[in-house]
Amino acid sequence: MAATFGAGINLKIHAKLHFYAAAIFAALLLGGCETERKQTPTGLAAKVQARPDYNVLIVSFDAMRADALGTHGYHRNTSPNIDAFAERAIVFENAYTAAPVTPTSFASAFTGQYPFRVFVGWQLLDSLTLASLMKNSGYATFGIFNNVQLAEERNFDQGFDAFSARSTRDEIIFNEASTLLETHADRKFFGWIHFLSPHTPYEYRELSDHLAPFQEEGRFAQSTGGIYEVHNEAELKRVRDLYDGEMFYADDLFRRLMEQLDQLGLRENTIIVLTADHGEEFMDHGQLQHNSMFEEVVRIPMMIHHPDLQQGVRTEAPYLNIDLLPTLSALAGVEPPAVLDGIDQINATNPERYRVVTGMTNAKRYEIMIEQSGRKLMQLCTPEFKESLFDLNTDPGEKTDVVLDWPDVAGDLFNELQSIVMGEPCRVIVDSSNGKTPQQLLNDEQIEQLKSLGYIQ
Image (cartoon, rainbow, N blue to C red; front, side, top):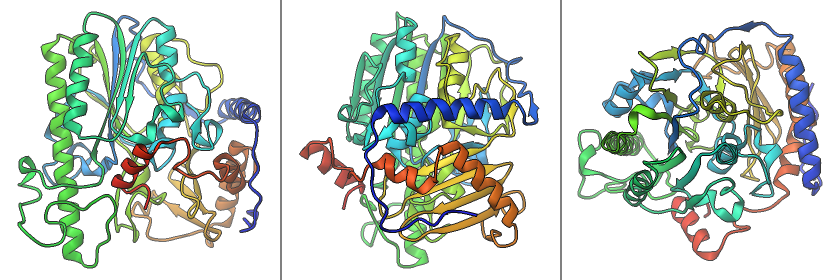
């Protein structure tokens, strides 16, 4: 069924033209395939209309696990303000990221394309990004990102009039974001604000004491640090408590930001998106942070508040963050690029689509998955080749691997994956990565920031 991925594979350096050609061909191929599949109207077009006169603001959070929100069923009081926001928003209950780590996830969200097409050698290729599209359509554009993974040196500043990407405290990001909103209050703008919370290090915060009580001593009393291990259930509980506290802090940042919009009179003419780059894991499948393709990592919150929306809408449409560009283009009345992997979730019909998630930033663990209608095939490329298949319809916790029981299903999914990536999936990942390390294209200060967050040991 699947080609074996040899450990001694050659790393080939492909020219950018090759990737653009592959992206165009693949997108055209997929576009032709989608029309033949069963399609169902989403119903969202009847709820909201294109408004070229509205601002567009994206607020994202790093490592925000979808099921850690009250609006997604979490039992703890982690997100009262986001939950209230969801009551007047379009909530995508079945939203995925295209990659389980920050740079590749944002590469997809920025471009509407899978990361192996546009994020090559740890750099975003020259692309028509969402910010570029909005700028070309008359929007003033700004982006402030609390993660050095999105540094200008990696070409993530494309299309932004004002851009900042570094690692600092979220309070600083909030203050700078508030200033940017004030500066842009009298013009039509597209803005993106990315907070690091609830990403590691998970820290004790006084306002979250009801979730993570103060401890004077002991392991993880005040912080987990950027990278951590747990040795028993008590440590795991403390870590999760701290994460929940960070969720509550992130929720409070969101509250303050929405209050700022209200004070500036911007809420009534701004389309607001709340989302995340990826989720987080707590030994759900034997791992910590975000190093797998399991649901706790690939599922993300995705909500759109449209001022004209009279009441909230919840949809199970299979969203992937490559859909962000075409969906916001539709809401802004902007013509998107002709060739995209993503689809417009507002006006287009919703196919029973395939969703691909790519793990290509950790050379020790290259991984890729494809999912359709709850059937999910995962391929681990390194350190050894392994395939797993899960039926999320009957096994949402991904406890039972049925790859040996359903070989035909696995084979069909693998064939579709090959068609989408335009080649042998594991090889495509390696070719896109080009064998380069996260440190490339960054200066010493940025590398130290990555180390403090646990990206580099």
